[in-house]
Length: 168
Image (cartoon, rainbow, N blue to C red; front, top):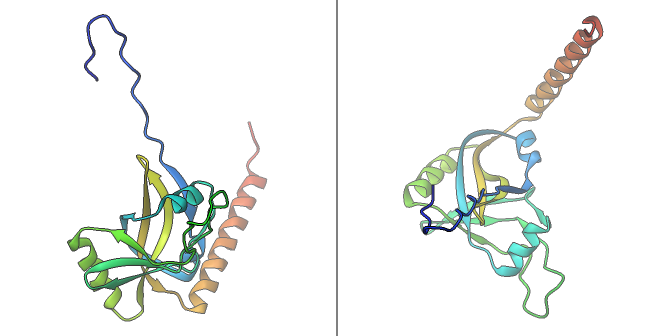
């Protein structure tokens, strides 16, 4: 609880609103996601405005580790329409803010054959832009088909249960 001066009412505690800005549903279809890490992302002012307006696409995004730094590439953030001449480049590389141990962990994982690091979702946390990264292994075509079959079978079972059980 906050301290307050004598005779003044206490200000209400502010709730931190964590707002999801974008998610990468395709990543869960194309990859088996292993470990997840939250990273900060260095953005310009016009990029943040576009993010909050929902003008972002994570589908083709991936992470590269270069010289001990993590860079987010392939993420399209549309230019902010209400600005003059000084706008950002939509597909530029963006630096990820991670500890050295986290970068080393991602580098070890991504160096294994068949593994990569992909962005899963983009959100704000206490006013700061964050990206959730996942260590991912690419699925083969038959694995994707198997997941679809399992999902359809589960839907059919759920529908059959709903038809048989009378509502009270």
